[in-house]
Structures are given as C-alpha cells and as structure tokens.
Amino acid sequence: MYVNDKCVLKFLELKSKRNYRFIVYKIDEQTQQVVVDKLGGPRETYKDFTNSFSLNECRDAVFDYDFITQENCLKSKIFFVAWSPDGARVRRKMLYASSKDKFKRQLDGIQADLQVGIPLFLNAAFKIRLVFEYNTSSNS
Figure 1 (cartoon, rainbow, N blue to C red):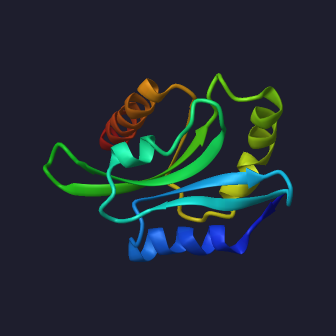
Figure 2: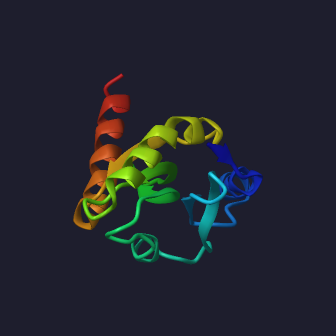
C-alpha cells in the first residue's frame, strides 16, 4: 500500500503548525494508495470529527485532542484513530487493518492509538485512554 505524500505533509502541518484539528484518510482502491479524505480546520470541533465517519466505510484519521489536566493545564495529544464499523465490508476491514501499521509509522508524532467501530464508543475511548495514560505517568 502506497501512502500519498500529501497525507504526510498535511499531518506535519497538523503537528507543527496546528493548521488542522483533524485529518481523515481513506484508501483509494483504484490507485491502491492512502489519500486525504477530509481536512478539519482548527476551529472545527470534536463533533465535526465524529460526523466525518460513516457507519458503512472504514477510515483512518488523526485528531489533535485538547484536554485539561487535573492541574488545570491545557494539553494536547495527537491520536491515530482506526475507524472500522460493523457495517463495513469485510474486505475493506481487512485492507485497512493490514495497512494500518505501515501507514501509522509514516506519521511521526502519533501519541496514542485507538481502534473503534461504534460512534458512541469513540468519545469514551479518548477519555479512557487519557485517564489511563495520565494515571500511569503520574504514578511513575
């Protein structure tokens, strides 16, 4: 699976310049490459991000997630989200699953990884991951 150069360039803009809140990627079956599907501007919300997903199509995405720590500090974490809903075709799920690691390695700076397929669980997965990482790092 080939990763289009624009995918990495837009990710670097999200990471360093914060030009985007999120980027949704798709695999173009015709060209057999990962391409940018949607760019979420810096003012777009988490709701805009979740509305970018279909219940019938797999997607990969990155999301710049802002949160406030218990010490009242604003922090940010870049999440990689593998969206694989139950309604997607099995062949597509297998294609996305088999290309995920290679694609993710090209996005240097991913801080957390989620695999979700049910919209309701997406928000919970973000929060659980942050709580787990915060509690693990604060106990060290």
